[in-house]
Amino acid sequence: MTAGVTLIVWSEDQAEETAGHLAHYASTLRPHGVQLLVADRSASESGRQRVGRMSREAGGIFVSNTAIGALLRGVQQALLAATTDYVMLAFPEERPSWETLQGLISAFGTDQNTIVALPVEDMSSVSAPDAMGPVKHAPIIGVFFYLLGTQPGWRGMFKRDEFAGVTGDIAGVASDDSEFTHKAIVVYLLTMGRIAQVRTQGEFDMGDAWRTRSRSGWPAYFGSPAFSQQYRQILALVGKNLPEELFVTPTTPDILASGFAAYFSQRMSWDLMRANVDQIRGVNPSRLEEVAE
Amino acid sequence: MNISTVLVPTYDRPKELARLLGYMKGDWLRPERVRIVVADGSTSEQLAEENAAICRQYGAVYRRYPAELLFFARIADAIRATVETESVVVFGDDDILCEQGFADAVDFLAANPEYAVAHGRYIGFSGPGSMEECYAAPSHDQDDPLERFFRLMGHYRAPAVFGVWRTTVSVRTFEALASLSPPGLPGTYGWYTVQGTHDAIASETLIAAGTTLFGKEKRLDSLYCARKFVSWGAKYVHYTSYVRDEPLAERFALLKQGVLGLAPSSVDNAALGQVFDSALGCMIGRTLGDEANSMKKALLGLAGRAAAERDAQVAAP
Image (cartoon, rainbow over all chains, first blue to last red; front, side, top):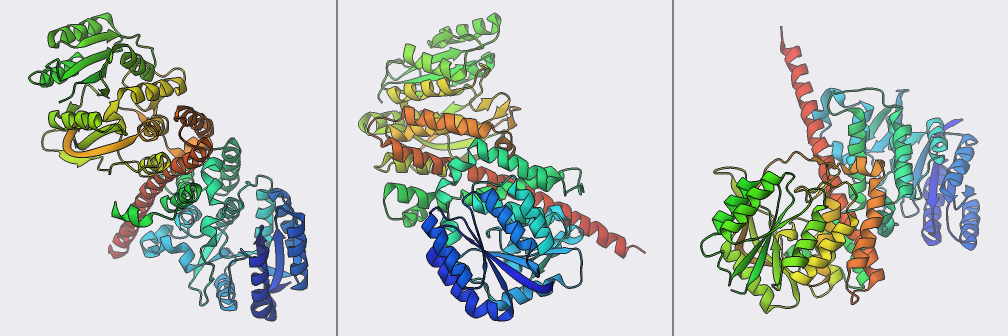
């Protein structure tokens, strides 16, 4: 096994963006030995075939399934067969640079307990790490501040073995919402070891696509029995790795639940919901009017 | 001033009721200006008798209800049975309705038929010298009812329930609330209390639906109400546990059904369903964000104290 990276691209009805991402991969990352795994959850057979063809042409492994749990199991199997130490998740609209990947790899250093390397802006809410002092490296604190951050869940680099294991566990309780599932995977990983923060040299150039991805369905989904069940299962999975009680109050489960509260609140923010309603009503965004209020 | 009705729900609190009606005595209680109805859910005959005597003293209409009757059912019945004026305000026995703001709101509603609710500025107090303006919010007077509903819920800052309502809208809204309230809700003064926990979603959502789907909501500049802020001992819902334990899912579906059923036929039901999702999402999202921010402050505080203790240990000889 080489100390390289497998880039996992999560594609979901985004053939055009995926094509752009694969072109970026072929010209920028493949020359450095970065391997490619495309996990596709497109709804149509023709869409899956197209992404599969592009992925193989780019020299990548392709796994596909419309059921998120089955797809994650496919990812797990593919990763166990891969020959890299690290994995990194990306959505098609993202363009991670080689410099970014290098910076993240270097963050693992020689510390065996470091399991996740995150770009520093991803942990922006931990911008007061000095204030965190002695609890800086407590997993539950890392989890809380990670969830408090505003970036989507998949940014960062992970040790392959742990990532594959976690993916298999989460596959059993996977949520219908891809991003929530990804967030759960990262949170689960964060409970297993240290988080290394890296000020990366390159930028992701990920745009704003994540803000509107499936967001219109979030509130109703959040209020569904299926979501409640999955959330409970994820809390149980993640919670079993969090034995330490740093404080009497708040307790570790309280901190974990509040962290998820932060994440949920971002997904149902005024801006996102305002955009939904403007779309439903077929009107132009009325934000100027909002400010005037 | 046009004539209106003040409906006072009360229970077991003759002192508060006497204080409120005493305050309103003077010009307030002239029958050509305002009628007072008291809907009493007291738990004992003695307290009910005291309340009835107070009402006789001040010329208020008194109606007794079983203590176990749902609070919202009591309100709906009292309005239906006693209110003959075009507008009505449902007002707690421990708050202060300000005369000028009330008169302005009643007159505004009478002159503007496209409005369902009117009220004004609020101040809150918890004791002498602790008074400040609260519930500051804009009017929700956009032409599109969907936009009004989303804005009121999404930026929820003020309980429009305390405003002067068009009576027809008020009855429909409180009946909807009564039909959706879970069994076992005590007949006490529990606006938002469901089985011992503070549930802002149910009542505030349906009240927002009533005040915005049937007409516009007006905020006048007059001082309208002074509210006494006291701790009434209810536990507050933490939404993270609410979703984990599933009542949110049940409630979400029930409320959506309630709002869709409440809406006038002129409102596009399919679009309202989608707007409902976003509006509830916004309201829940804000509550969850507040919860997370409180935790962040607590953690940073604990970490700061731990760091200070460590520094003190290092500095010690």
